[in-house]
Length: 102
Image (tube, rainbow, N blue to C red; front, top):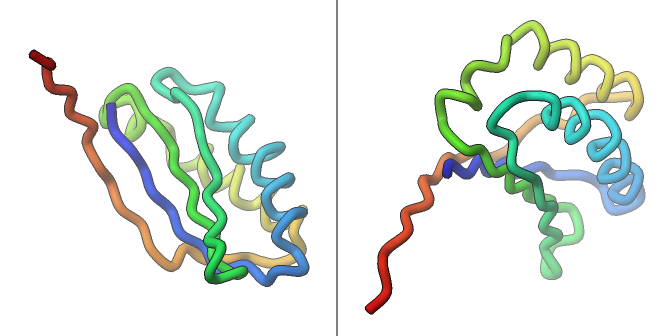
């Protein structure tokens, strides 16, 4: 499994709308592709502007197989719904490794 971590700075007054629109547009859009396993939204209790999205993919190859045109279309729809763009302030990728337990 591969984890995609995306961090955004979103004003507190639009945070709930941002999360709702993200679920409606981004999560629904990504869920159509093979390899999408799920998504979590983390809210930083010490910084009301910080949102972290954790997206789980079965493989990196499936994640990277999503056509860039499709991602651009989803982003455009999301930006229109929000009325502006909120750029990613940090992104990272992690591999999940499972170890056998004795």
